[in-house]
Length: 365
Figure 1: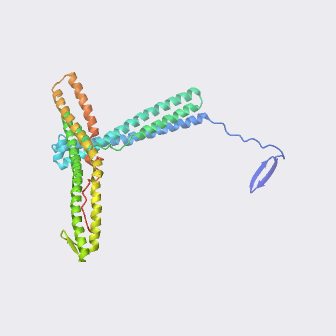
Figure 2: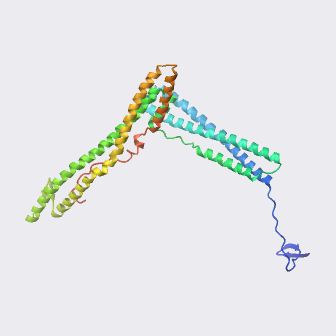
Figure 3: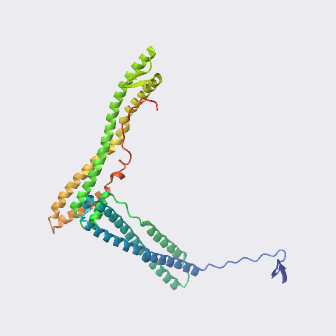
């Protein structure tokens, strides 16, 4: 054994002989018990964070939102509002009604969040108990299969929590009215039908106005093309006379044209007439979906009128099992129709500006 001092550090060891083989490097054997402890500890940490979020965030938020809901309902009733129709008669009630709809939407979203967190907590607790029992029974770490089970379960729980959003769902006007009537205890079947019919009447009016605008543009294109063609013919005659007599400017329809301006106006008139002739082929594809939507709304309105008559008839048959069953069917259909309702500002057929007729300008600007 030889002792050396290298760079101020003492070193001693055998000097390897030439041709000797280096000693093999050994690594520590894996410790399954430590690995299983880490997995269980990670699951327990996740459980603790989840329970803390439930206790300190979700539950207090729900308590606050529910208290706000009760306060808003009292304020609405103080204003004499007993259903969604009452909102249209008072700007204060409209503002409070919008607050109520937003608050209830948040309550529903947070309730989903709470349910997901409680379900995930229960699953984590169950997982931790099972892993601890296996570890104790085997007096060893978890097997690869069991570790994979831990990872899979944690991923599933994370996915469950990620799927639930805290944002309130966006509601169309008919759904907002239904929500408010639910909260104010005025959500009768006939009332729901009236709201759906009102919503469809609003959309029908908007679609009909857009269809009328399209037809108006087509009619105007035909009329404008004829008028501009007449103007062009008169201008061409005057232009030829001006060239023959070398007399400028020429006057047509109350406007004066120098030679160059007249040539520009004649060319612009030709281009304008060509564009107007293309208008029907450009606008007609816009009219077809509007006509289909209008026909569908009219069918739904007729169906709603029929459902209202049926609901009114069945509502008088208290204790009639068949009538009760039909009432449930009506409610299910109304829910489906409410989801289909589209506000004009969200309607893809109406979001683009309405077409407008083009006006002819003979000048070169």
